[in-house]
Image 1 (cartoon, rainbow, N blue to C red):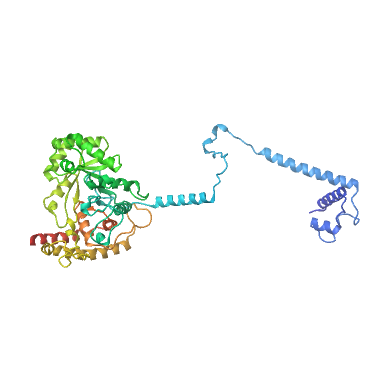
Image 2 (cartoon, one colour):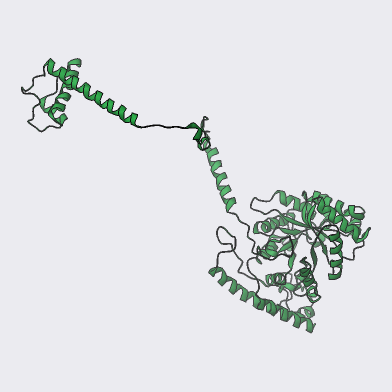
Amino acid sequence: MNRTTAALLVGGFGLTAALVGSPLPTQRGVNQQCGLARGTRLFSSRGNLPSEDELSKLLGKRSSIKKATEEKKEAASADVEVNLNLDDFDWDTMPELKTSRPVRRSSDAKASQQEGAKDKAEEEKAVIIDFQADYEDENDLHIPNRLAWTTERWGDKSKGFKQGSKLKKKEVRSGMFLAGDMQAAYNTLTQAGLPFLFTSETFGASSRNSKLSAEQVIARCSEEATQDSMDPIIAGTFANPWISLLKRSSGLRYGAQGVVSALEASCERMDQTGIELYQIGGSKLFYPGGSGAIATGLAKAVDLGLCNHVGVSNYSSRKMRSFSRKLGKRGVQLTSNQFDFSLTNRKALKSGLIKSCKAQGVIPFASNPLDNGLATGIYTSSNPSGSEADGRFQYPLKVLDKWAELHSVQEALAVRVKTRVQRTSMEDREFRGYRGPPPKINTDITTTQIAMNYIVAKGCVPVVSIATPKQAEELIGCMGWSLTDEEVQELDNAADLCEMNG
């Protein structure tokens, strides 16, 4: 700071003090405010005010400095050329003008909003795992994880169903189940990635008046399913019209319209606009109008959107080819053929039926894949009761002795596969097309699961009867692992030996 500037500041102080009647600052105070060293004086005589001429000169100089500063700012602004071409302006990039106030929410509403966002995030994380996603399907119908299940016992009192809310311990041990068990099994399977299920209008038809037939329970399960459940992929069956008539589950059916009407009634009971697959019963079915009327009815059902695919049950290779040609003339492809096949009943394998299905592009579904329990490996010659509490023998000892070699191989493979799956799970925890945490794979392999994955290894889709959550978990345990070719060969060799001994 030079002397001129300091004098100007002091002049300002003096003028202000004169206007408000306050005492002037002392020399020491002025020095401190101006940043001058001690002993430096602004005027020649200590404590004297500047004269009027000197004050006028100072104020004039101050005004000229201020004016010069403003002129420099104006000149600088003038140098900046603003060229705004409104024609070239991108109005789409302009931010949206918000004129409304932000919505104020109560603390409860905010908490609810946060919970909703959390649930949405969890839902986005939920990914259904299909370990058979890259399976070379026979046709356009894909079965997730190459596993299916049936509701054949649902609502059927002769097969263990009990209407009510409680079971006695004795009833639980005997395998009885309630409507709640069926719903829990449904939720367990659809959440795990096994939504493909089979049903029929005859399943639990005796409980239809109580709205507890298989089709009616499916409707309720679908309605009350959780958000993380897959939608059911339903395969229905056109029941024998004479059996349906005897059971009073339908009126007399005939011709192509009889097939369409049956499917429409089933969809109504299941509260579905259509299903994925509709199959015709056994080839020995006598139907008014013949197989031609059945083929026409199936083609019409596809055209109406009541089903996406059609199939047959228990058709031999020859009859399957014949019926496939009839469907082809009506512009529809035969999708599936369902028949009995298990470790202890390999007739479909020996007859070439499975091979014929593959050659014709037809999916082979294996009914009764556990052969009523004989193929589970639970009931053996050394454990005829299967360690059940009642101690009853499920099969004659002669039958169990026949399959002793196969059951022994099943037990050995269960231990071996368990070790292999545990090791593989530790080494490789990333799966094809999977996002998120690694899926949980069952490592507690059972002989029952060995029997079911044998069917998968043979190119079939096992259709397992499920009525309780425990049975559902058993089926889920088949996911994520498979048998090697050597292990499948061991089972085949053992089964061959047992059949020779029988």
